[in-house]
Image 1 (cartoon, one colour):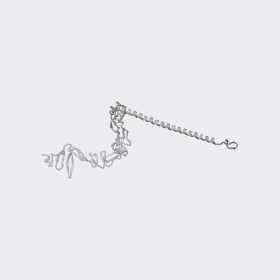
Image 2 (image 1 turned 180 degrees about the horizontal axis):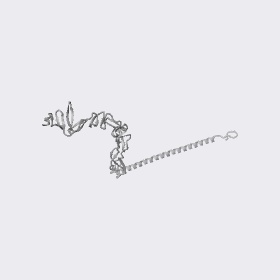
Image 3 (image 1 turned 30 degrees about the vertical axis):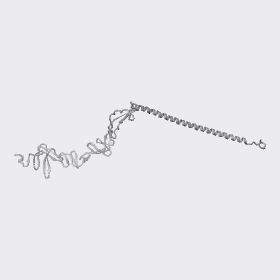
Image 4 (image 1 turned 30 degrees about the horizontal axis):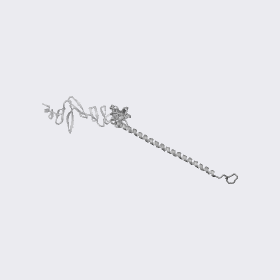
Length: 307
């Protein structure tokens, strides 16, 4: 007689990994390597077969059946009844046990729910082995350590409060030299300039090495000093320039001649005035002498004027 007939309500044609099951309790046994887990459904417990036990339970295997057993109340997950892997809130994991407090040499980490080493004085948060994950105010994090000043080849990132690797400027190769020209023309002058440029491949960071010049020039000799169709015009321009210089020279000479003539006239007027003054003085002296000659001569005896 089959098990179905011996145990009414038990079936061997189950779904979802069950080896045997019942309509009321679900899975009663599981296929090999699966764990049976009892889920509460109201007032009933329903058996389900799972490849691994859910969080808060650990699996035990036996020749008859594989079952899921609940962890200790303070464990959130465990490997077996004596080895917790993660603690519930308010407990801290230390050597596989969940404790309400940590030993004296360790501190409680609410984030990890573990007992961890005390952070170095410069750290605001750290992991095991004194590895800082966040520094105190004003310090910069680099490779798990906090620095007041970033080492060489690193620069401070005030936004992330980390030491970032410096980035130096990188430029490409020089381009070809431009045609020799002056004022945008490649003719009409003796000397001109050639220029060339190169591109910036990588711009520097705040403290990286600045870019070298990306533009340079050099002096050159124009191959054609005269532009096509401008030879006669240039000669005419040169003749006009010479004519203007000659005119200016003539005007300067005329002006100089006028100034010389004016000086001569002024000199002549001065000499004439001097002659006139001299003549006037002579006339005055002559009149004075004539006046002296007209005065009467008195005789020594006191008589009348001498006839």
